[in-house]
Length: 171
Image (cartoon, rainbow, N blue to C red; front, top):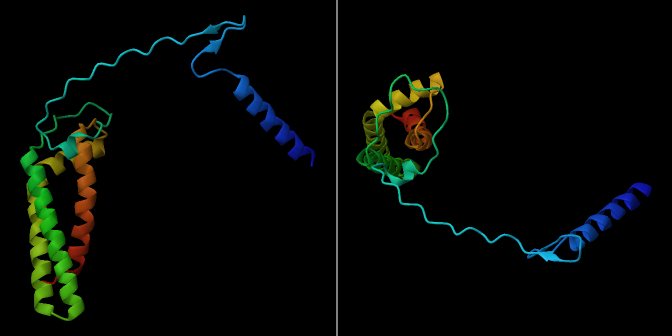
């Protein structure tokens, strides 16, 4: 009971201090006069940055780390667009294969999984120079440009689908 009363008293004191603690537009200087806050600085819009990367990849912050042993190869937007298209194709084929499997259509299932696997192989081939640099940078703790941080997010997405397809792929 004493602890609850002490807690309640503390809350009441804090509320009273907050209410009498000041006005959001002016602060009390102690001599009865209100002091107006300094006017906010006008913010100038930043000049847009020119990038050649895909907007979805360049929006990530760079990862700090050691100075890279070799520079990161720039990732063209066309490579990102191509891998995203291949991923969409692989996912569509995966879904088609799953529907065919559930309906008992083994031939369609096998064909769809094979096509999904081929799309995933296309992703791996297209990203090979960049994934090789990324793996080395990750293992060595190198600083990474934002486009590679974004690429790592895509690797996670691609790898999940690749693991599912490879698990059921029939040879």
